[in-house]
Length: 365
Image 1 (cartoon, rainbow, N blue to C red):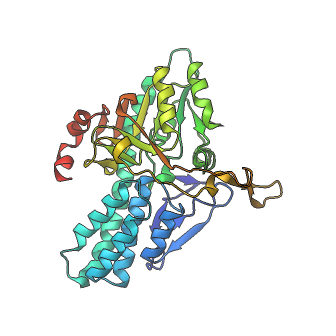
Image 2: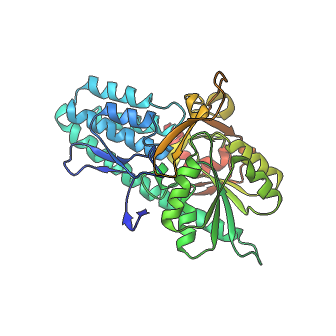
Image 3: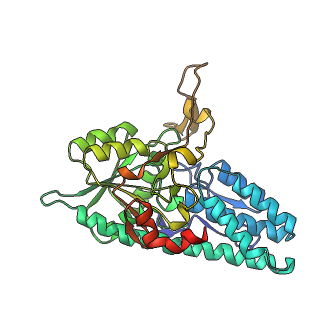
């Protein structure tokens, strides 16, 4: 994707070949900075502190983390330690476990002398696969956006939550990929961007991405979506997923469930865009079985922004002594979802819908 006319991915090999480089997403939108990761420990820290974020990207970052570990020490113990460290960095997104298990399966049977090169090649392959998968999601989702156009309405209004654009993946993204494709096809899209408290990934990241791509958009407070739907100002919703159960329940950024409820009540189509690596075939009931990450209360009690003179400052929002809870995700039941947009097609949010597209993957899980 484009930043001031230059094409970027979110993760790439460093010029010296000794590490990987990533865009520091904690500094956006006011600063564009690149961070170098040279060890598995640094990769895990980048995932944990959200220097990199989004289910597809943290999976690929974990794969590169394993590759960095193998470059330093290709022993069985090092492979096991790196995998355990990286898989524990964030508990909710299933892509972390998927990526670590894939790397272990690729490397475990190899002699130690072959592991570093094989790990690097596999991580690069996973990055390229993610780009192709997200672009396919974009092509399929753009068709849904085209169908959502209403006669006599000047634009197609799409509501999204959190950031599921190219910053959440290696390129293109998931929920925003259809929007980028539709925009490049000349469709008159406009995006309602939920701010997405408490870390404001919508206001900070999605708005920044869309601005760089020239996509018309408006940032809204998190509780505005229902009002817009009541007044016919949302033609469809598209969100991403951090984990999808085999029954079609979707775990995504906190607040997604409330958007789905409003969409259901107003008969607004509600789609979830996801790569197959996000499907957790082992579980069925998302509310009961998906672990929900609880992050630092400080993300709720404090907020950072740019002052008029260009300084980045953090201020406290809440009274001293007030407790704060910070649940990172919630689960949207399949019954509220119009359809799942995957790299293989659009399907019903159900076990039958998913197995029709990915039956082989379920048997292998």
